Image 1 (cartoon, helix red, strand yellow):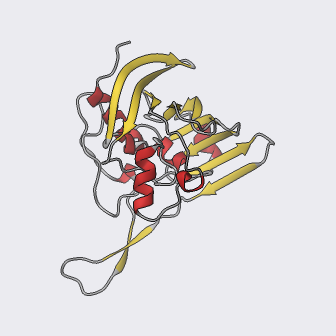
Image 2 (cartoon, rainbow, N blue to C red):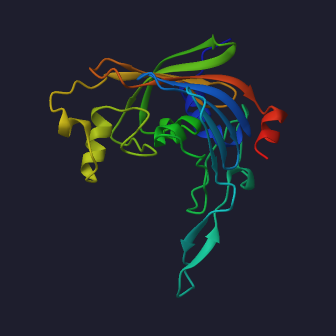
Length: 239
């Protein structure tokens, strides 16, 4: 098992939507919340809470976006394109070279809790606007995991500014610039993490660990244990 390069780590982070169809996993937040989940792409998620309550989010019906062509005079709806409907070029390692840039492209999986859940499943925000250091590869819960110490730069573009994967001074500044809520507004003496230790599952690209390095918040970060990838039984469960 060899350590990934920076380029391969970034490529894995942008390739998630094309690397699996179903995923069964346990998600643990640093604040103690634990849920079990089954995801079937596109658009179906079942979550079971620690108390045994099940929630299903079904977004399998095609979504639309309002667009206008250069030669048109009125807006119209067009169907959004899911990752499995878009052909992408792959590099020699099977990673996506460049993601679609069309406004019709829709890679978002169903949300649970907050948008860092969506970013966890498709961490494209880690592929640019970040520094990547201290790369390593280990086995975690029986699965190859790629690790990096990461920090956001001023070019960081989180899936949602209020719940980025790399929360800190940069994300707070970006969120404040667009008038969004910030932690510092209520906690002016906040100490931000210096960086984050991030683990990506080498097969799926899912973020399986996000741990702040430094700072004074004890509610940040999460861990994921993957139980099954593309198990036919999970496809049946989605109906």
